[in-house]
Length: 86
Picture 1 (cartoon, rainbow, N blue to C red):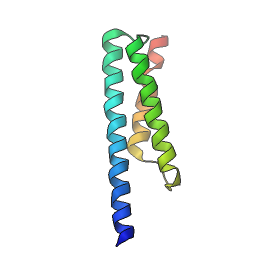
Picture 2 (picture 1 turned 120 degrees about the vertical axis):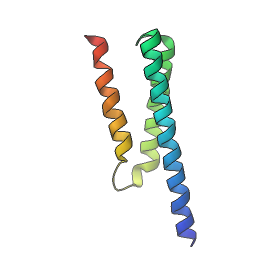
Picture 3 (picture 1 turned 180 degrees about the vertical axis):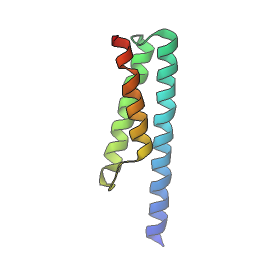
Picture 4 (picture 1 turned 90 degrees about the horizontal axis):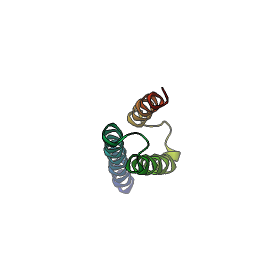
């Protein structure tokens, strides 16, 4: 029973982390579209997003496979940033 509770708590933490990543990503994208990709605020959100993603990978390091939602969010983020260089 204790193991079941631990797994449930881990699942909640993982979902919370994914939600924080999603929200920060949206803030960053909206800021970039409004203030520009090189604005201080956009860069701040980008750095905070990096920290959240790194934390997620550190915590989930023992997991057998990465969460698909984070992979998709990361791929979408990569697709957005190169447009700045064009």
